[in-house]
Amino acid sequence: MNIAIASDHAGFDQKTTVTDYLHEQGYTVEDFGPATDESVDYPDFAEMVARTVAEGMADFGILLCGTGIGMAMAANKIEGIRAANITNPELAPLAREHNDANVLTLSARYVDAQTNIKIIKSFLATPFGEGRHAQRVEKIKRLEVLD
Ligand code: RB5
Image (cartoon, rainbow, N blue to C red; front, side):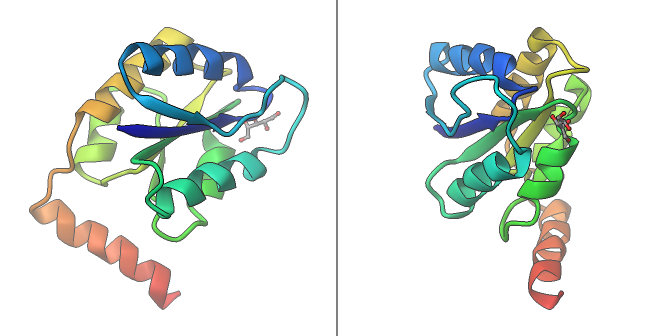
C-alpha cells in the first residue's frame, strides 16, 4: 500500500515519527515535505498529497498540522478527496467504513504521537463499508460536479 504524507512546521516532528512507523509496518511512503520545521503554509502541502491521492498515485494520504483542520479544509478542495480530521481513535474506523475517507488529517499540537499512530493503524486497517454507505458517498461525489 502506498501512502503520501506531508505536514506543515507544526506537524513536522510527528511526520518523522509517523513515517518511521509506516516504514516499520511495510508501507511504501512518499514524503512531500517539508524537510525542516521552518514555517510553511499548510495548503501547499495539503495540495501535493491530495493531488497525488486523487490521481491514484497513492492509496491514502496523511497530513499533519497543528490541529489537522486546515489540512482537511485544503485537501477537501481537490476533486475526489474525502479528507477526515481525526483526533480520537474511535472515530478513525468510521471515517473509512462510513465515509470512504482517502486522506487522514491529524493534529500534532493537541494529540500525542502514540495516539495518532493508533488512529493511523485503525484508519488503514478498516475497509469501506459499501452498502448504504456507498449511496451516501456517491451523493458527496455528486456535490463536486453539481456545485
Ligand atoms: C500553524 O500555526 C497552524 O495554523 C496550522 O498548523 C494548522 O493548525 C492549521 O489548521
